[in-house]
Image (cartoon, rainbow, N blue to C red; front, side, top):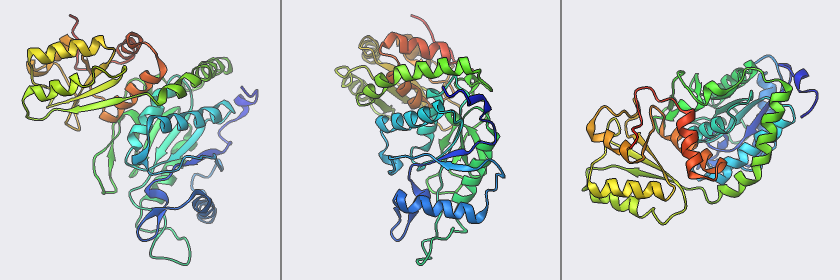
Length: 366
């Protein structure tokens, strides 16, 4: 740990990371500009427009992974985790990450899980329209109708405040990353979230002492080789309930029995209701015995799951864990982090149940 960490205050630069997406696309048809073209252009525009955050200054964190966010994988998520972890270890605390919107909420939620217990400040943003005006072919000019410039400046202001935690800033609003979901495929107000987030948002520390920060960093660095090695094998499946015969869902779960330990998101109707059968109940028992974690989620964008209805509560007698009010991206992120972080199915389950408070839900014991 650099001994100067405590002297690196709010006057230090915000580290800006560009990871691709619509934000840096240009031309007809739209295609992402390469980093060696886009980054100097963005630097020039920031200098010309003036830093609306006042202070601190902006610096650039080299990132070799720039691609469409729909192509991101667990290996890529770990890449960004390591990139930020290394910069944090060098005494940097505030970051703005520009990514594509397809998996923006998934990446943000994953970083929130991974950095829980630290005092890092990460703001994730993107845009629904490119920053640059493709109608202007002789120079790179800001598109006045784009949301990109506003989203970037809002994110820089949020990072300048330096509040610990991972947030997503979009459309003039910001939220804890694990509460955010994309709700519109092309509107500028594409995301929503809420501020009443529990773990991991409540696990961030406003100011860590050098000793506690060093302990946190040492733990993460020790785990990093195993996390990177596990990323290739990490698998999370989503099973979407439809008005089919229950055997369809049973067959889908049966097909996963031969797989290594994985995460399964069970997307039920309404408050998490899924069709019952004796065969499905037995399969859920087998899934648990094989080390898989099954999390109940709702197909509804808001409200989450509960055990109020018999049509949904029965599954919790067969080792299914209630996803509570967590969004699908947040459930995915938590499952992925547990798969990477812990090598024992029992420890993963224990960590989920110990860390998460689910208002309005309960987990039944058999």
